[in-house]
Structure formats: C-alpha cells, structure tokens
Amino acid sequence: MTRNRAVNGIPSEEMVEYYERRAEHGIGLIITEGTYIDTPDAGGVEGVPVLRQGAAADAWSRVVEKVHSKNAAIFAQLWHIGAALEATSAISPSGIALDGRLHGRHMTMRDMDRVCSAFAEAAVLAQSIGFDGVEIHGAHGYLIDQFLWDVTNHRLDEYGGTHPERARFAADVVSSVRREVGPDFPISFRFSQFKVDRYTARIAETPDQLAALLRPIAAAGTTIFHASARRFWEPAFDISKRTLAGWAKDLTGMPVIAVGSLGLDGAFRGSDTAGHAPLQPLVDQFMDDQFDLVASGRSLLVNPNWVDAFSKGELHKLRTYRKEYEAEYF
Image (tube, rainbow, N blue to C red; front, top):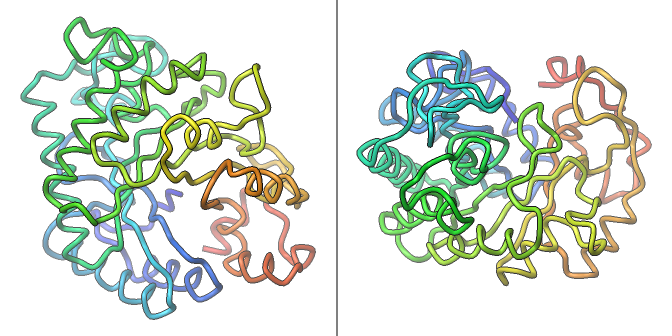
C-alpha cells in the first residue's frame, strides 16, 4: 500500500515507525509497499521507496530490524510500473498504455534482460538485508502485468500471443530471482485480473487460460501466489463460486494469499465510508481450502491494531475506514 513517505527513494524514519506499529499488533507477515527496483525506468512517483545499495539499504535494514523485534516476518515487494508511468521514458511490452494509446517505447530483448537482472539484484539485496522473502509485483497493470494482458501486449515474438507466451516474461523474472537467491528463499508472485482504475479488465476469461498463465510462473520458482481481487469473496468465473485465490490454488497446487476488502463492506476506492463486513465468508473459504494466508490493506492503514482486534472479536471497536483517515493513522 503506497504511502509516499520516502525521501529521495530512502525510507524515512516515519516509515520505520509505521511498519513497527503494525508488527507489534499481531501481524504474522508484512509485505512492504511497492518498492522500485534500481533501474531508471522502474518508476518516478515522488515518495516511493527504492531498494538499492547505500542509504536506502541502511534504512530498510532498520525497518527489518524493528519488524523482527516484534516477532513478525517481512517481505520486500519489488516493483516496476512500466507504461503506468506518465514519463516519455516509460517502457512496456508494446509501447502501449493501459488505456490503449501509444505511450513510451516497446521493450527490446536487452531491456527485458536488464529488468530481469534488476529484479534479481534487488532480491539479493533484500536477502542480505534480512528480509524473509520478496514479492514480485505482477498485478494491477504494472510492467509484468502488462505482459500478461492482451490489451497491452501486442508482441509478435515469443513473449506475446498465447497465454503461455504472455507469461514468459513473468517466468523469466521469477527464474532470474530464483537463480540468485537460492532454492529456499521465499518468492511471492502477486497477480490480478483488474488494473488501476480498470476494474473489469481480465487477463484470463476461463480457468484454463488462468492455468496457462500461472503454471509457467509457478514452475519458474515461485513459492506462493498472491491473488489480488477487489473483493476476496467474489467468484472469479461464472462457472462456480470459487474465488481467484481458490482457482490459483486449485490450478497450480501452490500456496496462495487471498486479498481484497478484508473486513470492509464499502467502496473499493475513494472517500466513501467502508464499514466492517462479516468475516464468515473468510472462514468458510479457508475451510474450503481456497487459500492459505489472507492479507489486509485498508483495514490496517487506519487501524494498526486490526489483527489484535480481529483475534479478540472486537472489530466493533475499530475505526471505520475513510480515505482521509489514512494520513492521520499513518
């Protein structure tokens, strides 16, 4: 969950305290906000942290130390936003923005090799800092997802066309990371159907298409999939009530994290109020073996103690989510 509190890419002391506050209230695993890999075209939004040697690595070390001191684990989420960047230097599979217009330039093989290497270098640095794993951000219309989505991937080479071909770059990133971090370091891969402000977008229309995308990524060395949905309980396809997380687990046999409006009953984005939703669907789907872990975003932004309250059955005591509360409860 991007907080825009880094200074020149370096995590601030405010960020150190932010992660520590959430770790001390019962979270088992923290996945950081999106963190740019160390390549000039990865992003450019002010306040977003980067994972690079030097002062940024030192600051992330303090984050890891504080989280571990509270008996929680932490993954670094590695991010390249591709054509979601409004700069003319943006790169993407086909030089196409999320709205379908020509934007930036299409990636050459040299570009793809360079980006794969940057993801691997960031993962190695995360491992050396003491992170417990990394998450590769392949969701929401950012660079890797732009390869997975036929709207932004018009390539005519082996990285475009069929679903397995569109998954090739994601698999290359994962395998590059796996080669460098060794066999035991956890790698999470985050994916989604929807994109930023494009909630009806889909990378797969059927379970078979989803399998064709996810199985090569799994085989490349993924440890766990993070299935990002707007609402975790909604069916992924019309043929059954199985969720996106449930399908990912069923199709790949891999552990899966479910996420999407956990505990909230309001709008996905904006300033609308989101009250506390019943959690019985979460329990039911867990018992149905549709996921192994569950993640919370907005609930934790405004309530650092959300997990403690959940475990005590005291959700009624928590602050109702409003967009404007995010800064107040940073």
